[in-house]
Length: 486
Image 1 (cartoon, rainbow, N blue to C red):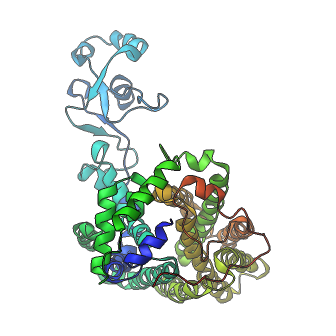
Image 2: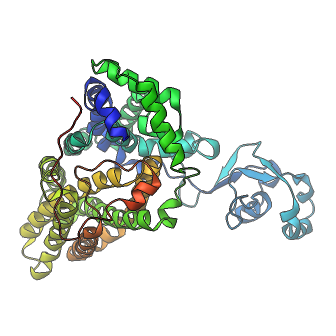
């Protein structure tokens, strides 16, 4: 029995799912662009270690050596949240003890910081992390801020039927595009970074206050074997959707739990993306696509000042094209081209558009701007399709982790994009060509992903391992089959 069969009985796109979209996911998508762009540096975590008053007059390097023990799970890195459990008064009048301590520190026990922390001021004088104490035990809140948008999208994807996933993804992308299109006006009216941060704070606080509206994913409850919660969630979906509770729902839930337990899905972890061959191939291809598409997305956004024309208008045009891009995504991935060929064709075409300026002289600034805007339109469509593929290819138990790693990989690469954009001040072709080549290579590589249109989501790692093995390379997506559930 497939989970989709039970979900169809309780309603796979009724008021339960629509309520979640209307009152949480869609509003978050609309305003998320206002807070996601400027938060990377505001949420930077400076190097830090436990504060020891007795060592306050020592240099920072000596403090690090005397205070920071190696991490228990990674001896090659120093711990920022623990300190050696010793009497530090011995160092006040005996400098020779520093050398002795360095030679014997590995045999000394450690303890949690008890006098606060010291922060290295080399890179940052102050960030939101230092002001709000978002480090050590509270460092998870940084991840929460960055991932609150993607988590909502994953949950929505998991509680709607296959036929509605593209629709939800299209609306979500369109609202993000509308939000980022309004961002230049917000920046213009706010005038300075303090006012902009106040707006960011208000929007972020509203999102955090609404987190309780987000229910637990029934697929995740199934993966965790939480029988009673899964039954209550499915029964609640049926009630909210105005349907009667399906006959033998408890028995069907028991069967799903039993099948999951018998599948051997125990102790799954993110390492499965690297140790399971079938899963690894899809994971690496999706990661490559997201890295190339994120490079195009953020690289073109950063490069708007290097393009000919008004900077505010350039940014607006690069943003507003995401609205028709989202509409195109909704349509094209439901055609026989499916996810695979749509993504490959668009990503390759976008890369070619970014490489065309090589053949143009610097006098064709307007043409280069138009090509950049059109390339943003095409590559953004490919990006939305890739996220759809990721949500459909990864097993339920690892879906959040997989998409999280993909996003992290994209973020790591985007950290280098400001330097690439800086090179574009002298020659705008450098960032455009670099990104274009990456998109072409990724577009070709993405053809080796399996097609997911009209397919059931893999719930287990072994299902994800086998998914798509019978598909031919030169083939189109299958036509939808008629449901047997009324």
